[in-house]
Length: 244
Image 1 (cartoon, rainbow, N blue to C red):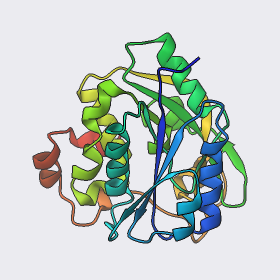
Image 2: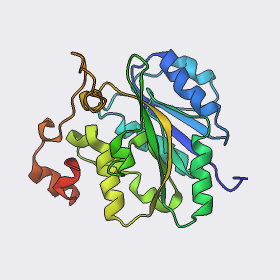
Image 3: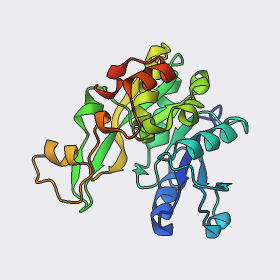
């Protein structure tokens, strides 16, 4: 059905456990639409992965940019090996079994689409499922693991490695706004097929739950070594990228 597609999934990893990597890989391996998994080590390769049915790319040192550089390098390698589309999957997340198939089916029905996006199912550390996030449902945000990027949008792939480093933590927001400003056509599957592990305080709050002491916080105004002037000089993107 999808013979003219050759999907690749790119996962950067650093110091994560082998069991977490296995869980991530298994969700790719079990997809109803076959895909090739690229595991890109950001300076800390696990030799056992050489025995898995993956493309194992090993970078000599860590870039400490939330996986952006290994993500870009893995994607560029996949592109130049003839893969299309390129999907991403962060190592602590996993796909539902039909995730890739859904993206390909939407592209097949809407050939003009450049990027297909899915929704997330938020999963708290204790395993509690919060369902889709309101930012996804309102289409204000596309998480990195929800992207399926087709050939007509490949020109944006290097953005992962070239965005100024302080923005790495909000790289998916930068990428989404860049895609919009480039006039790319984006369509959503409407399905929460990415299981997204979260410990962000705002997700606890939105669920009406008490925020634990070890929760993570994300505030674009508190990014280290960051200024509005530097952001605009680098990107020519609207400052409201961090406020949407």
